[in-house]
Amino acid sequence: MAQKATFYHAGCSVCVDAETNLAKSLDPKIFDVEIVDLGANKTRVGEAEAAGVKSVPALVLAGKPYHINFGADLSALK
Amino acid sequence: MAQKATFYHAGCSVCVDAETNLAKSLDPKIFDVEIVDLGANKTRVGEAEAAGVKSVPALVLAGKPYHINFGADLSALK
Image (tube, rainbow over all chains, first blue to last red):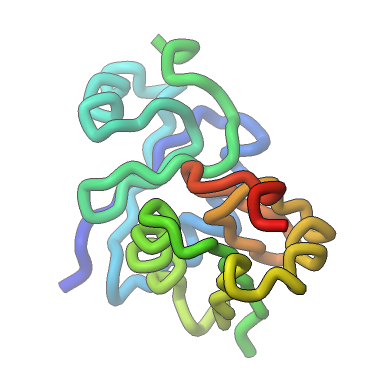
């Protein structure tokens, strides 16, 4: 069964691009990816921070944060 | 047919981790990933730079660079 992965973004162009090329290209046999827009779901910023996310776009895979390029600092989304 | 993707790294721990969890989790139906160790293959640093890579680990997908966390600046590998 695929592990859960989470892609956090904020709707910025850097984020959309990373979602299209990277987050949606993960092997569904390995990761089941949930896409979370922190701009629209500010209640989930705390959960992203707890996973170690500092900026978006970021992927949390196997409990570890992977920051991809730089769209926005998490503090800008609170 | 899968598109070519390239994962550039330099053997650092941040790189190895990103390779294991991210580069090797791309859907083989979408991307055929080549893993390049720039520490061992300095002749390919120029190619990485030409693709827009500034630091490793980085994935080049569909011709665009995605920097993942931060292991080392490309200038340290020349």
